[in-house]
Amino acid sequence: MLELAEMVDVEVVEAMDNIDEELSDIQALIIASIIDNSKDKEVEVVNADGTTSKETRSVLTSKANVDKEIRKLEKELSGSFSESTLNSIKAVLAITTSYLISELNFKNKYKLNAKKFFGDNVVIGDRTLSQRTSIAVSNLFVDVEKIYRKGIIAGQDVGSIAKEIEDAFSKNIYQFNNIIRSELFMAYRIQFGESVDKNGIKWIRFHESFPRHPNRKRHKCYELANKNKYGKGKGIYKPTDSIIYFPHPQCTGWLEILE
Ligand SMILES: [Zn+2]
Picture 1 (cartoon, helix red, strand yellow):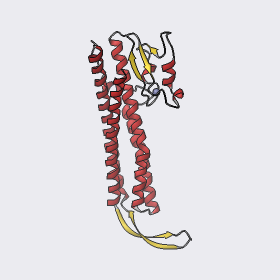
Picture 2 (tube, helix red, strand yellow):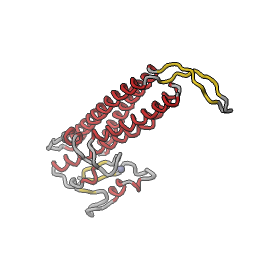
Picture 3 (cartoon, rainbow, N blue to C red):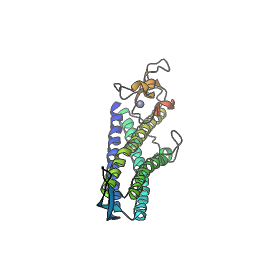
Picture 4 (cartoon, rainbow, N blue to C red):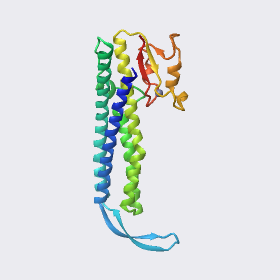
């Protein structure tokens, strides 16, 4: 049943590629807006030896226009990231149920409602999916705003502002990837547990995904996969043991039915 988890991972990679592409489009739009709102200006620069000289730089002049454009892009990204993550969750729920129906002949075809269960509901921690996706977007835009505001004050050349914005995107992308991996693997495990329970299966085995990972013993999934809770063997749980569905963020632990 590792192959099901691998199918989920394919969805994860695809969702990460999509957000990567969307983020590079947004990055390009932000940089274009900064360039459009700049003018060549002669500035006095202090040289290394303490002398000053004149230099022509292209500096950002219409901050209001850039602010407006950036607020619009932030709102768009917030909406689209939340929606695309929910669509990927839907795909994962469908992959999981159809695998169980076709490979294991499950009679009960119950599938969770992605929007109700994962979108609007606090499944883990204290936030909904759209709150988590909005926080990632907001963290990125806070960094972007800091960069061009500082650029205006310092009379920085737009070329170097653009470079810093690219760095901010590279630095923040992990937050988007983390959300995708966490949410999609959690959706898979929860649907697996629901289906198993509704089809009368009593025992499932939880496996850690990276048995050769150097820090694995620090992960909750290592503990779960090695614990013999019911004296039936390592990693064996009841479908009602909710701890196995979300051991820790970004967990790619997988589940198996005990024949
Ligand atoms: Zn894990």
